[in-house]
Image (cartoon, rainbow, N blue to C red):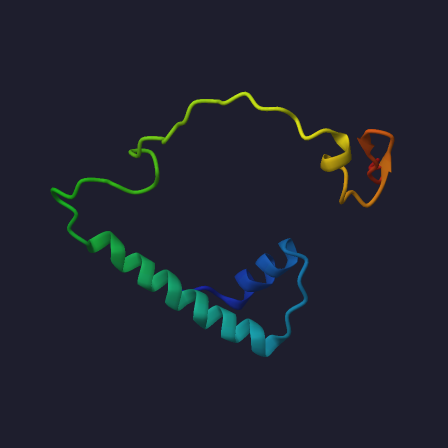
Length: 94
């Protein structure tokens, strides 16, 4: 699949990137090459192959929750950059 420089310009505009002409030509060739390679994957024979990607088929390893004592605010907030009594102080985000 051939990617034109016009399509590169559209993608650059959407990504808010400024790309000069020599880079547009290079990206056009590189992306075309990548898409051609991916296009060859549709011809691969996957007959009888069991799908086994991702973690969907794995069992989660769980442990029992153990109740323990809290270390308290002095230990918990010891390395806090800023604090107000027993609470973290963080910059306001609006």
